[in-house]
Length: 325
Image 1 (cartoon, rainbow, N blue to C red):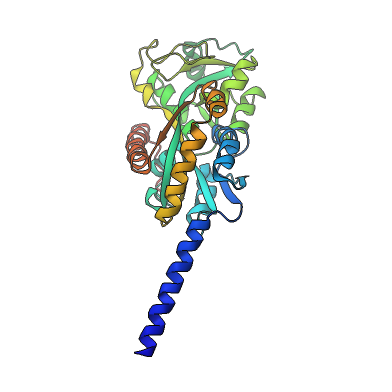
Image 2: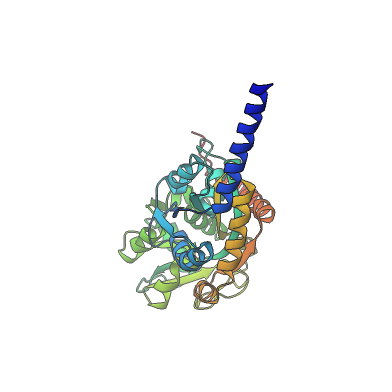
């Protein structure tokens, strides 16, 4: 009897302690893993929301770039982290839509993460160096057919990788995987720089990652994958070009923790993200880059991401880009 009573009291004490810990969360800085390098769409989004998010959290949020393997390195770091809310991930279309669709041996699945919210949707744009003799998408296609054209990306299995191949396919390149040279780099910033340095001919990436280069007349957009024009991008849309299927190419950013992140912590993140995404300065900066700020609650986020996975899995299969080992 005494042993049973002591065990019950101990269990109650542990439960009470855990509840108190949840109530006090966060008691120390939160590490936010950015699974791509500096300068890319994920990094730009994360660092733009950082100030508003930090104010909402009321505790420092430390941004850490952990690039590699198309976003897998940083994602695995969060997958294996303690589910205490102190290590969170900026999940991205590449790491949590394209990678799972493309790589059979990926060391994680969508089920290994708990999404506390998707907050940003990005259209895609394709661009070349401003002084390139390539003026239109037709010029680019002609160059590809002649041989020697390359495109840069933030890694194998990234949105940039699939987007460029899919655009070429839509415009008549029968085997873009063989007919154009893919140059995988560590992050979207490095991928854009490769075009500036003439290492790569073109890039297809999120408009947010290209906006400053386009505004500074360093890169010239050839097309945007939206049906409607993007502010700041003087380029034909997928509708203008008669390629409605290109509207499937869209990026997104959200925040996730390990799959067993407690309900209490997930709820706090939902409230913090609402406050951060309502911040006028954050919205103005992101919308000026062509991003759409739309906060999705966890259930909606999960459904959206699974839908995007289905879209990209079909694209990967159609393009013959699935990596089985």
